[in-house]
Image (cartoon, rainbow, N blue to C red; front, side, top):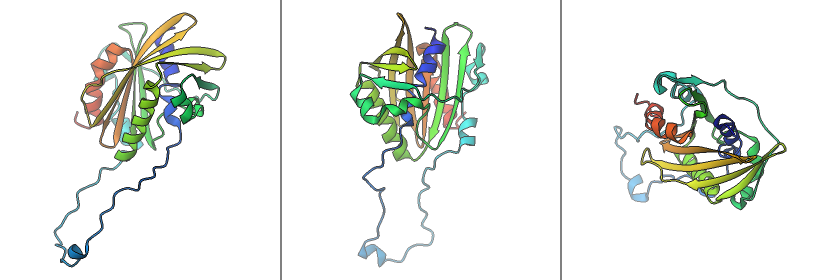
Length: 235
């Protein structure tokens, strides 16, 4: 199976389980209440509350995606695939099944703002890289991304069935580079009809934004740092 096919399947497995509805948290966000002593003190009119990080809009995320100029010669952007699949099931992974196999029918993290770009690399006929940017509150992006990666890497092997085609999956948790505020990484092997392909997926959370870079392991390693810097608006 060619990597471009594997990567499209990745959108129905490794990335699509993120489409599960967000689990409501039993913990309310921290609030600051004034004590009897502090309320008795006059408040200085010059006091300034620290600015709270806010999620980025779709337009802002789209501007921060990598493009051909960032990647360099040999990269071609692929047309965006907007089709949804509702004939995908996941078996053999209790953690993912507990989350709900309906997630396999989607295609992205369940955050309100998101943008995606995918590229092929002419240096190798089987090389592809994709980037997805998501934004929500820091608490939600952190807890939700961690929940899904933990579930996926808890199962060394499982099976995805797309239509009538079974795909045997193998996952391996990797050490992610110390970038951003939080990091996750895994290696996925897709086996279909005796042929296999390997896809690396690394996610970095920086503030209210999650960057997910997937594709050929070498390409992911090469472009991860520049994806982070552009997502942070530093380049």
